Length: 227
Image 1 (tube, rainbow, N blue to C red):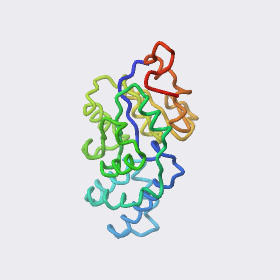
Image 2: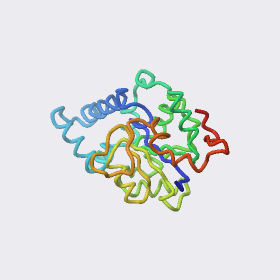
Image 3: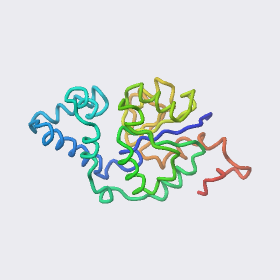
């Protein structure tokens, strides 16, 4: 595989969906809409779903329709004890470090949340940078503009030299249209809308050995992947 750069979504991609962290964040989103915007609990679930399906994030919809301050929103929804939900995974760390590509986190969350998650997972030094919602000027996946800005930040001209990991199918569909090699994490792709799916990232050496094949030493093993 002729790839140069890997982009990783953050939440529910770099840690197990079953952790409960993303569900806790969603609950904070609903609480924000109730406390800060005075919305009734009855309308919040359907409105959040509508904004997510239409714009990619609840925040984007709240910005466009309710003039929400994104800084206030992001601080509120991510105000959680992350250490209670997720734990470091040495095997995942080893796998990511073994990946012979430049690596970026590409998230609809903000940098502060991403840094807290990466620190808790002991993955901070595994990535060249964090491309967050501010970096892409509050466009958000799956808006095409977010991907183009991410490519510009990573200084990549050809998206076909990139691989992208995400747990959200809609985000991957846009990425694939742009030219990324796409990997769905955490659920099966039953409709063939992505290039590959894995239950967890640790399956990659088995499901995508070509990613390492061009970087193996003379002994047949990946030079920096001590299995």
